Length: 566
Image (cartoon, rainbow, N blue to C red; front, side, top):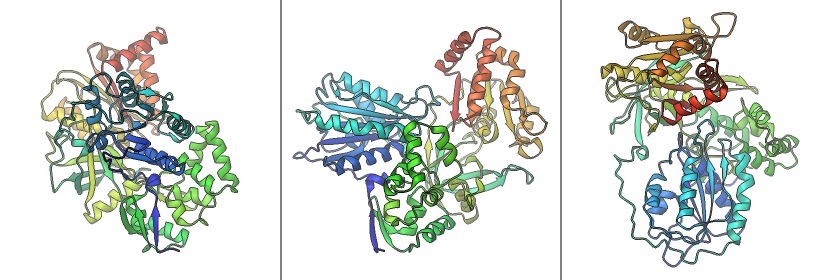
């Protein structure tokens, strides 16, 4: 094996922005806006394919391009995610503000195409790209191919779209002007105004188990401290944790490939030992459809790999999700007989390590400079291996060692407490209760007068009632006006929060008539949809579902029904 190998940045998602000069404009400029790294990864993947086909490209985030020496391009491909419900990612917000202030004709004649990524659980799941797309057209840019909306499993749709988009752009005449002619300059933004860009050094100051020893789950409460700078947030915000893969998982990889962890590799612009790259830089837990497509190209003779391609091409997400559900990347490599490949080829297809987001469970008014999070440990046996969640295992280890790690804030937008006197209904089973602990602690510390109703559920009351002492004390004090509990396995028939909502329909309608805001946090796959359906039935109150749907849409539009789901 070579003692030095390079992982193509087009495959790892690491930025290799090409600095522009007055004498050179690339054939294609690819600009991305990305919050979690998916849009950035996809942009670099597209750049790799474009470069392989002979197209000279520049690539940068939207804000990086905006602050470059010269605002120049010949053709534009835009790849942008939408953060939360309809918001610009943090590395595109300055570009968007600048774009809105430009004079008509600023991009007159520029050929462009736009690719959108979002999460369809939100109504405005691709709004950021739609906004950018529409504004570019208003400023005179020429859309060469219709945009496409990609869900979180964007491998299903993006791969079919961008080859045609690249061909359409390549066939278009380059922008004659090449440079944006405007006197409108980007407005300087300080770190205080863009807190999402600030990375924090963090360590765990305290840890305790919330679930009982007899519970089927291990749910932990962690209190984070920040030795270098305060972590400023509001109730409803989340915190991103940047984990590192465990030594045990890295050792499994090295053993599986017979590789030497001391072998030097280059990831993006960093040269480091292979073991460190696996530990710190690359996503080893979350397998995805794009990985299957890449491995099928590397192993064309493998029948299972080719079957995976057929499943993806037919759009059978249920079958693919079921197959991937309990497999990590190493499982997939073994099943597709890819361990015989040079590890260099495999590493080139891996995505960068994804951060993990946790709803903040504390209040700056009551908890000082610490941030609390509620974490459910992931551990299971499958495919002759023991699997652990990357972040939950990392946090468990960090609590023991005291090691520091990186975090950043993920600001909420709609998921915010209303005025002090407004009643709130909070629906958060399992660890979805975390932001509502934040809400309640904040309202308690600020002596709010608004009524509070919490719906909480889990498996067993005796073992899984998270923060029981706190919530019961808040009920006794009157802070919690009502607590509705649904423990699914304490009786023969399963009973969930949506069932409890239906039994309290009259009261919920009365709270809504008084202006209550409804918040939902937790699992988007089943719980969020079940709560949606229950609320529709409550709003219908014996009338047509059309009327109920209209009422629900009005609640959402007015910001009175908000979800933070994952």
